[in-house]
Length: 124
Ligand SMILES: [Ca+2]
Image 1: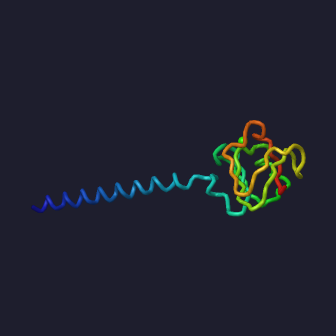
Image 2 (image 1 turned 60 degrees about the vertical axis):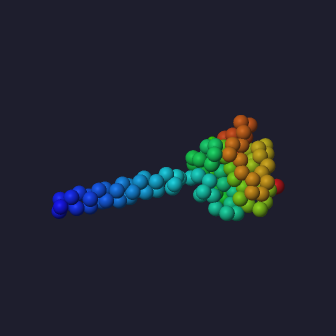
Image 3 (image 1 turned 120 degrees about the vertical axis):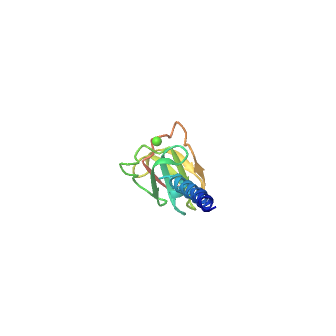
C-alpha cells in the first residue's frame, strides 16, 4: 500500500516538472532580438535583413546619418510615424530617393534597387 502511494507522487512530480521545462524553453523563442516588436510607436525603424530581422535602428522622422552600423544595410523598414518619410542614398538627405514610405507603412523587403543603400531618411 505505502510503496504504491509514493509511486503516484513521483508521477505527479514528473508531470509538473515537464510542464515547467516546456515553459522555460518557450520564453527565449518569444524574446527574439531586434525584430519588428522592438520598433517603438512614432519611430522610423530599419533592419539589416528582410522581414524585420537582423541589426536594427530606431530613430525619429529625420535621421541625417544612420551611422556606421546601419549604413548601406537597410533591407526592411517600418514607418510608425505620422509623416511621409523619404529614404536617401547618402547622408544629409543626399543622392537618390530610394523609397517613399507613407505614415504607418511597413516594407518587409524594400526591393533590389534600394537594398543595402540607405544612409539617411527624413520627412518629404
Ligand atoms: Ca541588408
